[in-house]
Length: 224
Image (cartoon, rainbow, N blue to C red; front, side, top):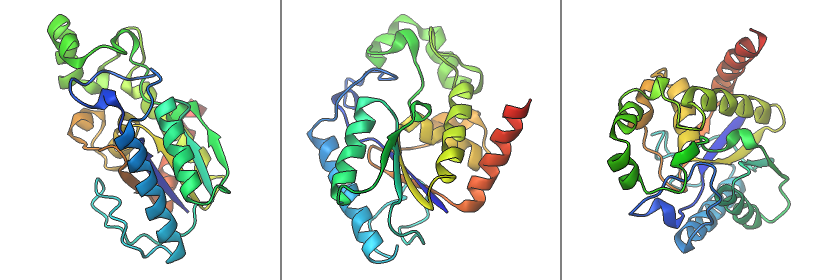
């Protein structure tokens, strides 16, 4: 069992002057569409070679590209436009026959009144709130939105459920969602949220042992 988490391709709001996207529906730009095509082609090649093709993936994880997974059985995407477009392009590169579903739990944080605003403007107009976000992400709630802790729990639940549906699933998601999964799996806590680097189009892999850890945690939280 393997889960592959991929961050959506680039949008214009990822470029400087960068804007807070959150749940805003922002399309991919030309670079983002190219990134999605390249990752789709790399995943197709890896499947053809039984998981041994060097696609340059997993750079954020530091695992290298020689995973033991093969063909993608299922694609699950965040419902947000930039993720949906990435998923649809990858699916086309894989031949168009892989089932594609959407799960809002994979979405980026609901960032409330920060959404659509330039980060520079947020820092200038709300310096104390910005400082709280940067220094104490584990307790931070976006003004008018959700907390990173709430996002982490829903993302982990989505990973658990995807693992129940396929031997190898590709989850198309967002930078914050991948960072929060890594915070859990690497044992750093959400305190390390800003230390995690996740670039557009990068892939992060989760093994069956790690899926079991996620399931145990989520099941325990849901039973409380």
